[in-house]
Image (cartoon, rainbow, N blue to C red; front, side):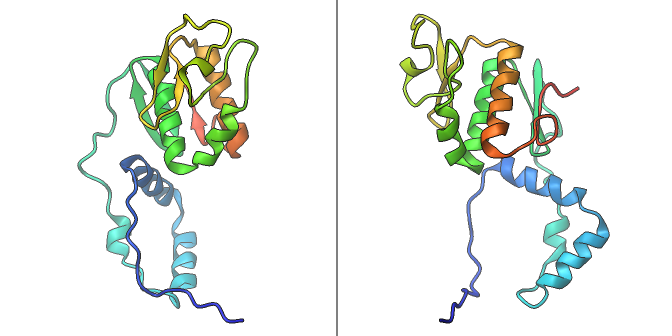
Length: 172
């Protein structure tokens, strides 16, 4: 059986946060590794290093916010802990949405970290406020720093990331 791969380039729409993360990770690679990677890909296609070396210029280096986290090398601010958690959930929805399904199945003593239904967050305290993220997941609006760290560690556990390295909070 012979498998042929298409030689036509495919354009894929990616959120800005993912592009920033890819560029940040690429800049972290040393020149030897980049050269070796370029040589290994030379037979398959031509690499336009001018495009790869380009840095986004239209994005602010650091916005203002009370809290700052970093996801795959991209730091971002938020005014509330719930907004920060919502942003991480949305970024994970862009990168690996299947991990959010796993996260939705995890429950602490009093709540779920995320849910597709608003009443699924606080089943024993339905009066507590919830917030819907841009990706459609519901999260608690009532979250402390310790609860946020617990939730971020759970995201890392279900996705194979490392808390403190791939996903950091707080960032100074």
